[in-house]
Image 1 (tube, rainbow, N blue to C red):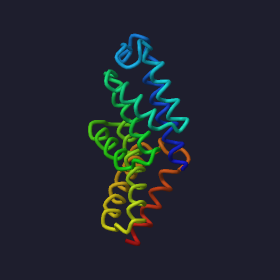
Image 2 (cartoon, helix red, strand yellow):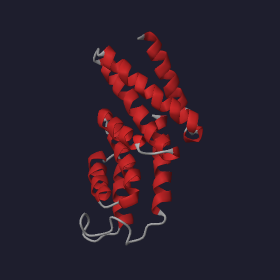
Image 3 (cartoon, helix red, strand yellow):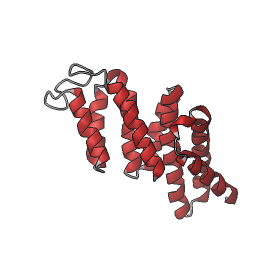
Image 4 (cartoon, helix red, strand yellow):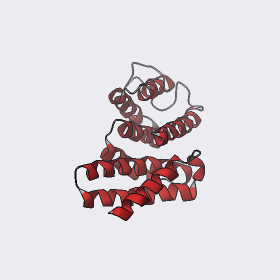
Length: 177
């Protein structure tokens, strides 16, 4: 659960950095998806829904924002993936985050890999509970690779060690499979 709080804080930080330069005329500020409300206001609705656990609403709002977000689209897609993760749609979250990571570098790639690895680990736990050991092992191996890269390249994205703890848990589980 701690990793979700870290991811939330990291995503909020990335979003804040991205949006501090946005004004009412920023990409996505047209009336297509919100009756003329500005981009910041629409983002606030999506973010607020995510923080309140209203994941379906958050996902809907993020999808509306992504359409017109221009260069902010990857950051919003990552928040959308985070909403999928928090709503328990682990396969979808992992897929979105993996696709994002493939086209990114640096801290943005590591942030995507954090969501990907976390989602794959949670999916593996579900698969293990269903007795699907081979599929779970594949997810654990992929999660391990994603999280190891994050910790190797950007350990600052794990300030309290929850990703490292998750990685240790994955390693221990893989030894038993």
